[in-house]
Length: 241
Image (tube, rainbow, N blue to C red):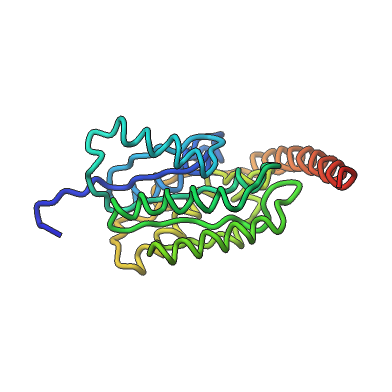
């Protein structure tokens, strides 16, 4: 790398998990895991992630948006982040072949423009009703293509916890986003990237017995609703099958 060649920081594509945003958790804002990674490495952050996106949206909408509006579309980035597939496998029309094509294109696009590329697998305990075997299909595909392209893979297959994942068993909480970012940073640090600060050191919060009780009650209510709806959907699928 030329000493005067400028790198543009972190470039991210993906869905709502990478887009970030949502309710506070004990006063801590819900920010994208990729944004936390950028903050922790002291790098600028550029994201084209959109809520509800699938792999074809990254390939067909987010990447063209980047090419159209970026001030330096041919510039190089320190790190490219791609987390996509959760909405794909939860959709009734899940198509592994279409996902593979779009994901390969998107990861290759990042690889051509970034010094490092990081992609992410999905938690096995995903959604209600659970996505089931589709998660394994997705993760194997992500890992295979990442190996072909030369990207790092952040394994979130075991990612779950009351305070890390919302009641829908899909979206990370504010603390969940931080946990994902710190897993990513550990992987990046092992690969030689400099981590200047850990995200958990950048937040401050206080809890009381009352706020914890209220939070637990809210979670239990939402979880019951999601589980009941998931059970009805699963029953409907069984009857149609």
